[in-house]
Image 1 (cartoon, rainbow, N blue to C red):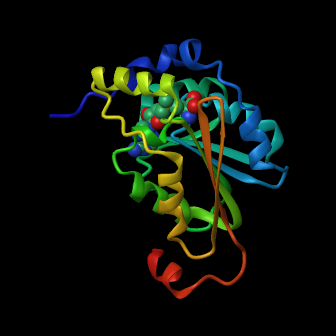
Image 2 (image 1 turned 180 degrees about the horizontal axis):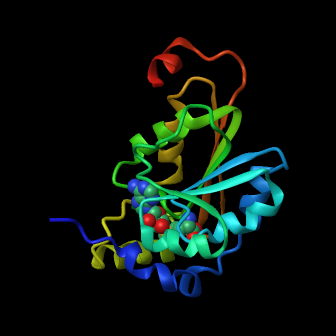
Image 3 (image 1 turned 30 degrees about the horizontal axis):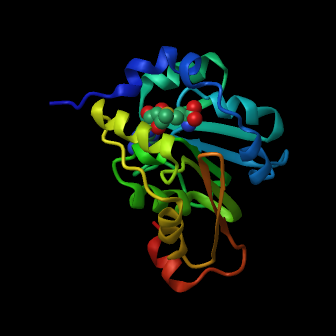
Length: 201
Ligand SMILES: C[S@@+](CC[C@H](N)C(=O)[O-])C[C@H]1O[C@@H](n2cnc3c(N)ncnc32)[C@H](O)[C@@H]1O
């Protein structure tokens, strides 16, 4: 039996309910420029991608819920439907990969991180924005999502950072502000190590 996908249902009303979060911190951390190719993975309705579009060469939303992507199309944001655990993309395709408020929804977080790392360009940057689970209000949200059977799995940002630190040539840092955390993973552009090459398809 196909599993129920909450985001297909809430797509048409998502921006009205959840669309007010600021993107200022994200924009500052990503240091976008007009030559950047950007992937907004788990990008949903294109809310964030639409704000980034004027700043970069290309921004494309990847998401598994067509109900969300239909809204992105109304914003004239490029999109593709895929699961983040298996991206239909060649390695080193993007200078920036962002994931906003989606990491805790993924079926396989390790595999997704590996896929993000694979398609990230040398010298590029991944920024994962997540609610900070050490915050009291975020803990309440986590309980609410459990009650809604959303299968969410909130990780501490330091745990996400540790996952990324296993990659050769990854420079990883964490920033937090007011219940939000950002894990910043930079792929250094020097020659990659043998184990990194072995990992890639
Ligand atoms: C809370 S919404 C966030 C949307 C957008 N990033 C934003 O901040 O407005 C989470 C999104 O992650 C997507 N998602 C969940 N699991 C996914 C997966 N395995 N692969 C791709 N997208 C996924 C959902 O379909 C949904 O659009």
